[in-house]
Image (cartoon, rainbow, N blue to C red; front, side, top):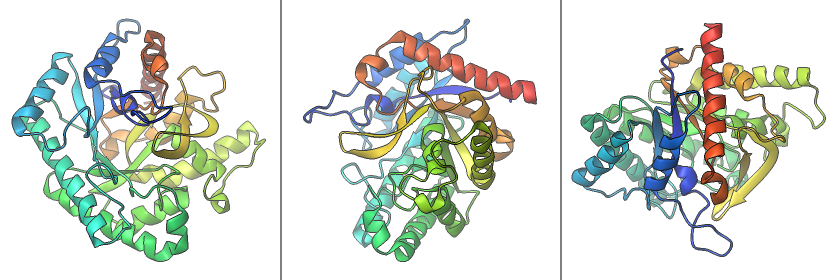
Length: 342
């Protein structure tokens, strides 16, 4: 486990940001790189970044030369690029994976675009590992619930086509388990999609500690709740083990995060698991212990790095050096704990 690299996500500078009423402005890629590079805990630093392939950080229609310039910039900080987020949502490049044929074609075009960029970064040398992250790009679950059998079937079919595209480009896709995405909003529905696609070599699961905590509580799918409010520590870890035993075999990408048990949305992003600072006193998770459940035998599943996700942190928090040092500190503890167990 000593080879696990530590990455920081760039998209907290983008997701939930904008120029709408009550929104904070995006934070540039340059500034996110600076903040990440400045983090230092006992002489140890972040190894790389995970990266959302959309404006204002990246124009997904960039030429190879423009992408190489971005790769040079990232490499100048001593960083590698790990996992990439495909712009699969309506309003970016893609559209709903359970929509009509035109929407699903847009979704697949976003996957093709992400694969192309991944290949450019690999040819440059800045990217040597990581996946391409997707989800169903269907905000909320009401439309899915209206015909859940057929809508899940559509998502599975779209994901199968996406997996074939990725496989042809030498890439792997990871579907993010998050309660705001239709068909992926509970551990059981997520498992149905993964098993329905049935291509583990090309499409797996991306686990985020903050999001999957809400899987346990049954938000958006109370019929699959594994815990009730007021649970004991023993009940928590029994449920956690049950959930991770189901999803871990599919897990090929992992986000270290914290959650205070609330849901949160910002801007156009639907409510999902609230990411909290690593040292948040209201955090529900023992980050180090919970990470160990997901990362058992990680190398066998091709996981070479872990990433912090602070999606929808306020800008003031993102600009604070303490935020990143506390994050890096807990990630080092996650890695050290795995090494101790090995």
